[in-house]
Image (cartoon, rainbow, N blue to C red):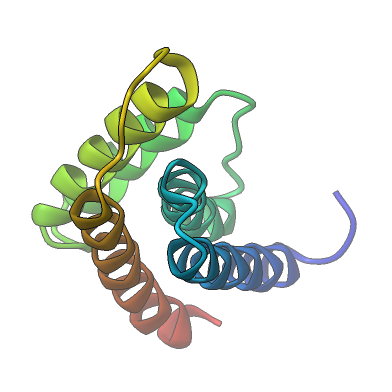
Length: 131
């Protein structure tokens, strides 16, 4: 991994921000399944931005999520409702990516963008203190 862990964290936060912007653009274009996908990845990269500061990384999404929940949510660093946001986002993304004929409503896509924005806001606040 090139750069310091803080550099990697900043890069991942930027990636999370870009994914959220893409989710909003896709929503405007009525590409709801793709919007939900980008909302999830915004959350995922935000979590990765946090856990890399511990030197932790995982090739599996479940590894990142489990580590984040165990070390940051259950310990009170982040509020418990973030776990619910993550859980909803991953389930919605998996359904929209892999289930034939799954229909994402506009309300669902908007809700996922709101949740991703909330998670990103929480992570930004945390990283401002760490970086």
